[in-house]
Image (cartoon, rainbow, N blue to C red; front, side, top):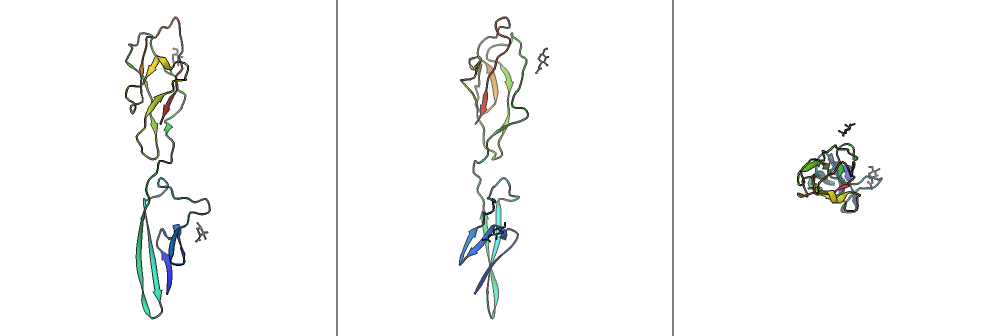
Length: 150
Ligand SMILES: *[C@@H]1O[C@H](CO)[C@@H](O)[C@H](O)[C@H]1NC(C)=O
Ligand SMILES: *[C@@H]1O[C@H](CO)[C@@H](O)[C@H](O)[C@H]1NC(C)=O
């Protein structure tokens, strides 16, 4: 009896005796984001002298894992001009990050950043940064805050 693999995705697999194994060698690894389709199809052909070959179709579904870090759109260092008269509790700026895995992101103010106490994020998924205390142009002309996307 002879076994062989055929089909568009056959190069992802190899036969080891009667086991079908994933060929993820040569720095090639299975990454859902890189695949055109999340489903790999391969045919196992079984041939024997004197009879017609039979085909066994194997469908492998590649499940997504959270293997990408979120990234901010555009420049990760932003400057915003905000009037000192902006009301406390109003949104002073928004930030948006992207995640290749399509996961829901949360935005967190880094409490160790220099002026973190001036800002707040009320809705963790929104990326909207709210003013937490009044601004005063005469005492402070610039504030710095770090927002992390998780
Ligand atoms: C795995 O795939 C690479 C090409 O991507 C090929 O050179 C190698 O021979 C394959 N390994 C096996 C065991 O089939
Ligand atoms: C903020 O205002 C200053 C002075 O008016 C201006 O030079 C600067 O381009 C403004 N920055 C932004 C991000 O709007």
